[in-house]
Length: 408
Image 1 (cartoon, rainbow, N blue to C red):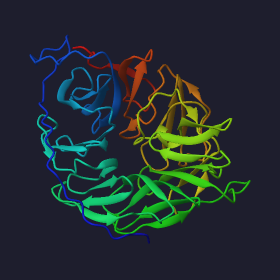
Image 2 (cartoon, one colour; image 1 turned 180 degrees about the vertical axis):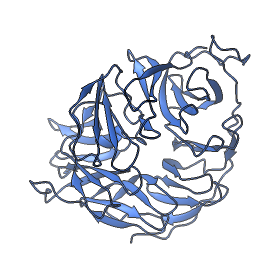
Image 3 (cartoon, rainbow, N blue to C red; image 1 turned 45 degrees about the horizontal axis):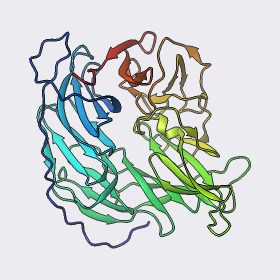
Image 4 (tube, one colour; image 1 turned 60 degrees about the vertical axis):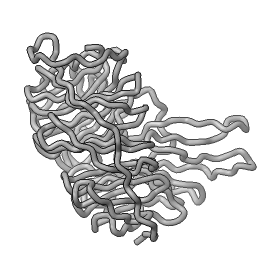
């Protein structure tokens, strides 16, 4: 159990006011007011709660965002919320057709709630001076915030008040992201001096280290370990472990994590400091950041999966190449790449031979499996045109769904 005393955060009222604007595609009547022209946008989040009803969060190159909603499987879209991101990342989570939460990460964090499917949104007060590393909600009432440099807060009333839970990791470690699967069970992504994951079973009040089994060659005796623990479904969880060489400034050698997500590592090249951005396996799973695949794979990755909440672990060997992973339950996983598809029936330990399918490459982290038949994911055609792919027959056929044009 690891916790520290701290002074409770004093919330300041967030004064960002956003206006919902109705949008209709040119071929669908709606009579909505057009949005201001933007040069381009990318998909920041995809969240469907039924085969026909879902939301897409878009971030524009001009530093703004928009939330799109469809209730007819993408035939028409409505723009429900717009605002300024200043390049901040987004958290979007809906719990049913009416209730959802939107969060802006980074400096000057913001939180929004809706109880009518996104037609109207209300703001919740957060500290305007805080830097928000991560947000996780399991329903409209209970959620968690992880603030830099590692302070954890919990709400049980939808963000009206927040309770300080201290720093969830030991003094030598650093937390980067928090994810809860229900009101009690949560996991952290962290950098540690040992190959361990952090898990809570009491709603974040206390945390314990979960040791991770070593690969055949063993763990290095020195250095640091970046561990991303991604819950799948039920008691399932996948851990990505990246071991780093000891960081020695005077010798100008070694590696050190400086940010996540994305995984940013400071190292040395010819005696000069360099910063590299890497992708890891959990970026390809739902809940990861939706970024393009043009990133280096982090070196020395070890992938482990658990079907019993971290009590036991097995090595994972997913298909090679950029793609996205989704799951309909703890054991049933899909991997989709560029025109390729593979499935696992044992939580990612073994996979079927890759099959060719007529789809474009998903954005990492965008694949959402609603059940064994229905799935959605986001993609960028040609690297610049956002769209969705959907299946309603367990992946036998896929349909391409257009999104609103950038300057509509």
